[in-house]
Length: 461
Ligand code: 5AD
Ligand code: SF4
Image: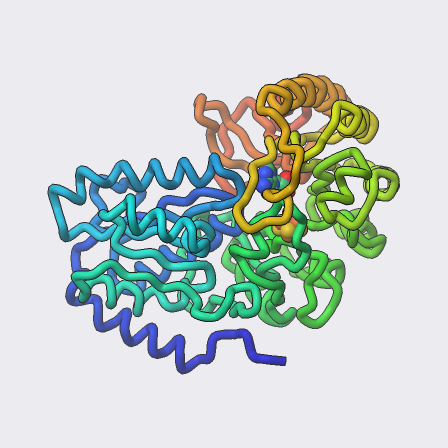
């Protein structure tokens, strides 16, 4: 197999470049603005780590930053518009101070039509770089700082035939107690609506030993909540099954939880369900995106399972893992979705009993199969279906949460919420509020007294 890890000499070359930049970057600040999924948050921690290595101080406030990197998401048009409008905010500042460098990276930058748009309409964006480029950030920054021209770093081969594991530079983690650990990158599933396989390339796994060493080291450093990341974690092929990897990641000494995100229903195995059920350190949370309750639509989406298969898997999960929270993603208004198709999605949500659903209105993506399909759904119909499903889900979720009343849940504290109330997350990833402050990153037992659709509230015992 081709070695997809970045060679040590290449990393050393980048570290040397980073070192050579420290004179120019002395006292300079950099800010990374993140849009999108957990994978992007993880990428931003790598970008921040590499920038710090180059000598920048990492700040949250873009107003005081000398370098601003916008890490973009291309999953739906809304995310792209938000990132472009964020870039637009810097037009005035750049006009006043030419020395500020503005970069835009990852999923949007990976798409040729967006690069062209940025090139033409956002002249104050100085540099773009694609996915899998984080390990080359010192070289990118050196080029940007030395060049009067705008700079573009995109893999030169067609991305979905090529892909590396862009690791090796230091990571600057946002949290001292929650951490992301990628297990695989990319996706080979080509769901017909999805841009991910084009933006992030084909699947490649880290090796098992690397993942285990990272998790072990995080646990030793005191991390309490570790999420194994991948577009499709079940496809992990780095030396064992994903279920085995998860089990081993959750077998080091100490109190901590291991989560994972995301798995595909077509290969949610019995082995994985057993590990979640039996390993107390594995979070009792299963995110299993269904996308639609209609087998006809699932086929058009190229999901490779039907309604019955999904229902059987969901039933098995709930039976084998009694205290599990099952969550899902649903797309409303996929091309040709009829009222009858939507009724099937509605009834699936009614029957399964999800603790949370993330509902998205279908957004056509350039280059995907679905974008060329006949029968795009009018926005009013999608909005109406969206509202009906949200109303239903609020009722379902509240009923499920009522089962927690009187029970004790173990919670990892997040300190205070925005309203100044002590809060944290349970193993099911439910938000829990309680009566007394507990420092971030400490576990506490809370007896639940009352609930809402997306909240448990109680007292510390
Ligand atoms: N339109 C709307 N939602 C989408 N998703 C992926 N692609 C699209 C699209 N083109 C949703 C899916 C996926 C989640 C991360 O985003 O539900 O599971
Ligand atoms: Fe996109 Fe489907 Fe891959 Fe998920 S499994 S990233 S929805 S193509």
